[in-house]
Image (cartoon, rainbow, N blue to C red; front, side, top):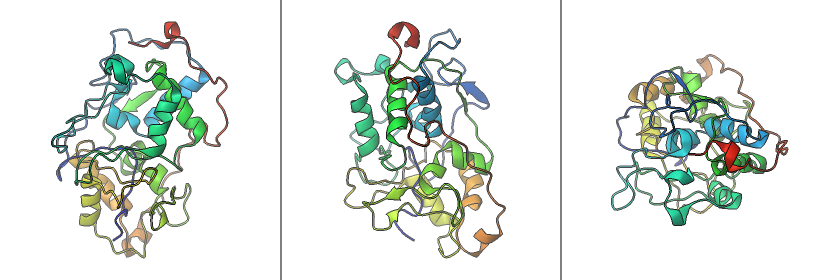
Length: 293
């Protein structure tokens, strides 16, 4: 099995047994109903630019919210990172140290492009590179949403995704590995810095990877040598996905002869700015309309 045989997006991690994912049901992003949001008591949406609205939707679609939490407050456990931060850092300036606050979009888009490998130790949460997965317009929209202070735009997040195909999409596996099965749409993301030049697709009838191997990659992640900037890595999902979610998604992505007998996947969702076009507004709203904490 190849080292990146299960590369999937946004990043998080821990032990071989899954921990819990938060409360059940849907919650509006950056509202008190979203566990750990740290948001003010008001829950009404506010007027923002189209770019910021797109950014809020993309923050959920690319699973940023699964690692950095609703409202960008961070705090997801990263307990295996011995000697370093034991939680995922916040993105919301209201929760960052004064000298580490984001002041411009380039700071954010550079991290999205390059990622950050803090260690190759299995199970530790690293920041994946999204180069080739998220286009420039989408990165700028996410940056605008972050710089606007995570305003309430009405985007919802399902805190307890239970169906296999929904887990595969909600945790952004689909945007790196592509839709399950050969020649499916979307295809796997390019990964030119890797030996295979792209992220491996799942449900590969010619691969003999076992479900136990898939479990290991999901829970522990994988960073290829030398872990270069811009090279896509497999995030560790041990502290993000529940045991039930992992057990549900494993048969959905399995390789080998059984893969050809699985039911076809649903149509992939359409993302904002998927063609790379600019948002209708290229600037973030002023702090008075952003709803920042």
